[in-house]
Length: 98
Image (cartoon, rainbow, N blue to C red):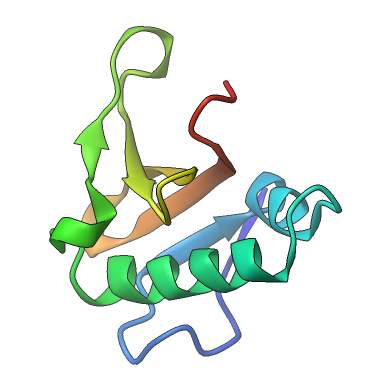
């Protein structure tokens, strides 16, 4: 289950946020600086998904069909590409988490 972003992330609004992503975002093991980095990366992803700071890459193996984008050196977000340029945000984690 997911919901399109109702809060203003950017003028484009091409992000479909899942309940899992929201739960990850609200997790207590991520601080205010982590959440700020995620919000910034979401804005960049929405406006220019090929921006070099995102270090976007297609995932393989059991995550084939998903993509990864970096929010910082230690944080990443995973998403699926949808028709019409939409991106369904799946998870947010540390790079070494699975």
